[in-house]
Length: 250
Image (tube, rainbow, N blue to C red; front, side, top):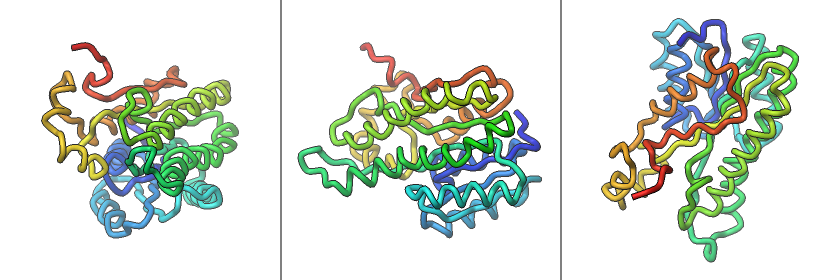
């Protein structure tokens, strides 16, 4: 799939799934800007790695929880490249703990990072994409939005919110040529899932029909499909990429 002539912005792009998305979109020919929170070394390493591609890759430090930072970031991308065709809202954190012991800070950090950031960046790109009558927005959800896990009331609430937000925005923008979809990963091998994997990886694999954990590239390929021309008639959908984990049964 080729994305020559397209420009993209990925939040949470320096590590894990976000990094794989940046790599995949860039290698498909898009100019890609990505947002990172604080790990400048990882961001610089990613830019250096992709210098061999024939496209531009640009790392931008920003706090995705800030509406003004989102507006400023989108404006910078449009000023640099003249347009913004693709937005991938990937930034996310976990602060797992049982609700009885959860602090207000743990609740707000997860909601603001995982859900409010989606509002911030989607609102920032809505008018430019509507004016261009073209756009592709992909929001990162999780199977946790459907399958509850103890200790994840904050995380599951944030991802359930992402899915509801995605469906509503898809209806608002469909007539302007802008699609809005979500990808819901299962257990993916990233830094974020390390603690859970280290404690129960064998049991997790038993629960997955595919009998393996997902890789960041599995998610990146799903994103690539949704932002490409072949998905122009798909909007308001949540694509589960989980090896069959949510199928249930015995």
